[in-house]
Length: 407
Image (cartoon, rainbow, N blue to C red; front, side, top):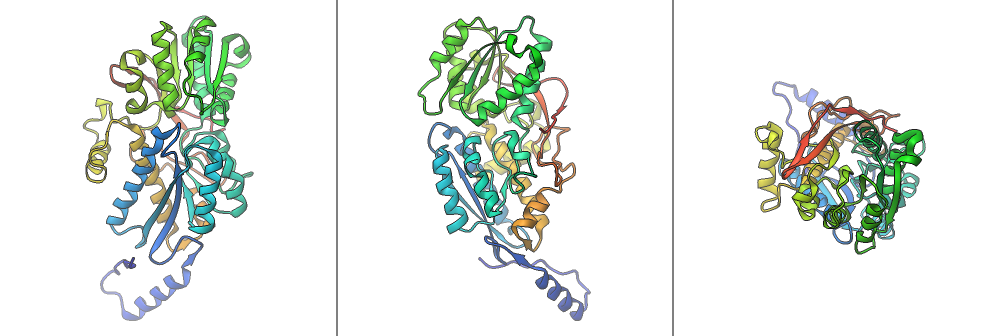
């Protein structure tokens, strides 16, 4: 790939041109994965396995970098995006990430997906001092720069999201008795810890029953029967898409009609609400930080129109009702801005420095009032959400944007 050079302003003397180009050349600095002509980004995600509904995120990111390259890349460098399938298996994640870092020699990892998967590689990435940026999981552990200075999250953290649900339940449901379905890993535990914190001293009384499932389980049907039998009148659905949809459907099948709260990571209309059955999902509450493409309130929104035009061009024939494509687009925009700010200093250290230096950046497709801010001591880029309720065949936002605590 050839290097495209940025043009100079007319009227500059030849001597000034020469000295400025020499200065620019002298300031160039590269680590593995960067050169005059390209930037290598590494990624892995579940293109197969129990969380394969998230595979579209990797496809969306791949299309985003193609669109960036079509416009000349970033500061004249094309993005070489290497994405591998880890099947949502931590052991496989370790294997493919070693390949990306040691063989492909990527500049950084970008948006690797899953709490257990990222947990399995976090120490390795920090020992190697290679950025593990904007991971696709909201676990609170991605915001600990003192312990893990090379790892940063993107979305609002699960712990805070769960605190917000707990407080909403206490304020709105009389004599709440909550049945919790929890994925038995760090993803599930982070939500449940936050939920208990939000319930405060009443947690022991309010949680009627907590049941778990493994990602290798075929279904969660027996767990939903147990929750109904506990007498719970609230259901907190802490599950990834396949199991979240199963749980909603099973609750309806057995005539259990609790107030339902569900994690933001399973809020996709296409991969969760439709398979669960729209009638079965009415009234479910979740948190949002991105514009939902199925919500008609955004039909005339400029960012939504731009995104749809981009989807038509770079992802023709895909389902634009899947919010995972919105997520891929927004997080890729942030990565693009980060790399652009690095200029010709494409080192691991400078990538992290720039990632930790955003002030109220407007990222396309975030909800109004939500921006990205980071600092060397604040690794939580997005710290606000708004609640939404499922109505008809889409989500309906309500209430105010609530700032998260980022811890």
